[in-house]
Length: 116
Image (tube, rainbow, N blue to C red):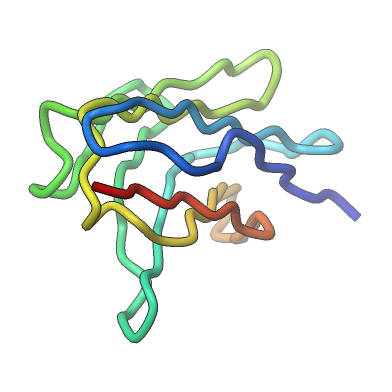
């Protein structure tokens, strides 16, 4: 069974940067979208950023201008570069792949903690 493996979370001071990476452990046929979601304690999971197969991107308003999502189609990998981090970015971050026709894959989550 294909799994998504995340890496790159950690503890960082406000204003710092982190780079999250997510790769599939096996091949996935026709990935239509890759994305990152996050869930803070007591809050619902929310979309952070998403990139679709043609390359267009979507960002949550709260991260626009600070986060950048990119993908490597040949490696089935998605990257989230997070700059100018704020304490309110603290959450568990999950990667998500959506494959044809509408199958969802989720990573196990990686903790990002930003302290002031």
